[in-house]
Length: 340
Image (cartoon, rainbow, N blue to C red; front, side, top):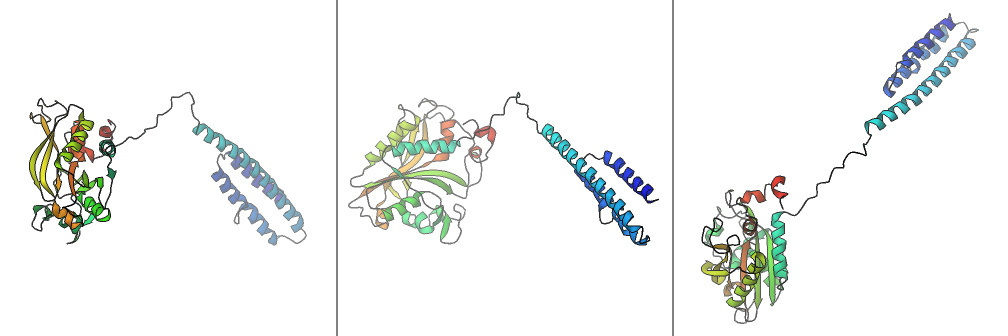
């Protein structure tokens, strides 16, 4: 009877083993026959009911079957491992005759392109690049720049206040104050960076935009020096036939002050849609550093003079590339950016 039962167990095992094609099913079969509650284990536990003289032969027969099934399991495991490896190789096969995929290589943002070009122009004239914090004290952003307490730019609707004494800088001019506090003349710097104002978002305005300001302080600096520097800058950026024009203006931190126009780079002064058919485009504000600003940082205005200017990088970028919506510079649309 025992041999018939063992043969039946073996035959059932062999039949199930032939149907198995993956490791998980093989493990389930092992547990079914040789696990703690498996068929072979049950047979071994049932030996206690047999007469003592039959137990040795029965145990030997059952252990022999267990060893035989274990060998079959191991052989099958090797076969399945080889099959799975082959399936994996086939699934991961690479057709070396197919054309390769060209990697997408990023490029510089148009703002970065124009910023670097302008930086190179001024570095070529002996300027150094200075930087400062975007979260700034009221003193550096307003007071030290001769901007009175009642000036409209200090209003909540124009400036982002963090506290009564700390703001998001509305211009990069605070960098000029910090440089003049820590360095004695001669000073010749440009200060590019992000600035913040409480503007509505539209085609020409954004609460975040970019400026670059310049400062020169030394003995005998005049308005003629300012005009010469800006003339060289305009010609380097827009072409040798570019002309500059100064119009009187008012800024609290410069006196006298001026708005600076250049001949339109698109129509060369003939008049077109870009320049409103005037032939001129406003590009920056400038002027001689106000004596009060020099006194605030401990520089004697009777001994030194200087000029300052500030330009909008976003506006210059839009003019250079004919971009008519400022929002395109901030939306990270790949279709737009890949053109540059």
